[in-house]
Image (tube, rainbow, N blue to C red; front, side, top):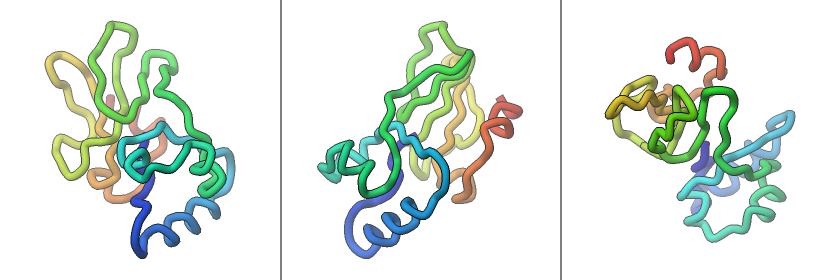
Length: 120
């Protein structure tokens, strides 16, 4: 859901190595910190193995980098972007159901989609 890693200093090579070692097909919804590094989406794929995709809807769940406004087409918005700011996990804001999956609030570990959806 974006902001995969910080692309400067000592962390740059650390994250590049970690990303390239991940198995399987890898996708990322482009985040604002990914853009801050002024790296093209194609170069990003070459250096990390992640294919950049746009925000998308699957069934009644909308996946995006930033929290979105509800247009009535989905029941929950799973997003990132909101670093070090509660609420994490499931929350409702102005009647819109969201799940903040920013890694800082997820104990710095990935969660399975099924486990997230059980909370929504």
